[in-house]
Length: 225
Length: 225
DNA sequence: TCGGACGTCCCCCGCGCGGGGGACCTGGTT
DNA sequence: AACCAGGTCCCCCGCGCGGGGGACGTCCGA
Image (cartoon, rainbow over all chains, first blue to last red; front, side):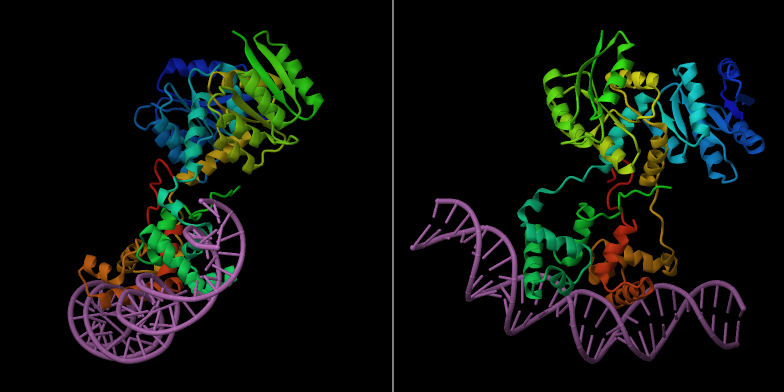
């Protein structure tokens, strides 16, 4: 089964270079070459290639915008590989957000370009190693627990526990039930928490807890598709 | 300049296989083979190899924990490549969080393993394409605006406005002052909001608003949890 | 023209909440 | 032995809050 590819780059020289690379592979067929983003979007819509290789810098519509347009249309099954000369961070984030299947530098060896196309075609994705490194760093901080405010150390373990439950919008009575203690006890804990953290009431406590990441506002969980 | 590599896997067969692969490269030298994570951490600390290739499943200390220990020590300059048979999502996130330079499947072709070691050694990173795909999806959602729950459409513009302020932990009186209306009016709005959203009290409303991203708990741009 | 949605304001009532006290016991430190 | 931090429980008091009503105006669409 042969894979169809669309090439989009405003430099004719680079296009023919890539085409030459693909031509060495019997199962890859370059079905179109275009010189700007708008043409790329149009050709993808009509030709439905398996993979579109887009340069980021292009006239009329840049590669990122073209990617977004292509992937926004559910009728398109085309995977998008983005090529760029410079690995500016902003590009990467926008590309990944749009759902690109690859973000590669033009310094990529020819054989890796070929394998990239195959990877994209089968639904996987790949990112240039130099970019991946920064992406991981970025991803890590995005997953890192938010800096814990120092005043939180003032709380005892029990008080933190109660704060968690307050933040989950439980009433004093509900907290008492969960902790198997009297509700007067819970009131004491809550009062201490409010005093120590300088909060006015439990409403402030809820906001405080969410802002400071004491509760999983949104499960960093895994939604696989 | 030759690169030194440490291999950690509890299967001797796999270790010798990898060693054979590295031996084909004159500039790669496998300086140690260990069978468990604890040994890996110790050997990395003493031998300071350029790259450590760790299996995730290992006795005593698994690859993830070992990675965290190795990378937590600033004295180590060793890069870590993680190998796994199955690409379970949880592993990936934890690995990236720890700062691993690579997350690869054991099905990786030998020549790519070699190139992965070189990539890691020069400070870049790479992730198996099948994992990258999900990572991108995950990354995209982490940047995407949280989905707005449908029941929120029941609220009028004014009610949403009041909800925002409630979520910011303002009292009814404070909200009234900000909106230049009477506090009885605010009470009406709050009551309607609670009724429409099925919330018990303003405490629940605060939690609801934060969970559903109605307030910028933390700037979604650059560092979100 | 009439209704309905919306925003504004008002009353009463019950209750959960938070602050102010104090009390007792445990475990660990001095 | 004395001490203290932490956890538990109890009292009273004031108040903000939320539900139950209702009222009046504007604006818009049927």
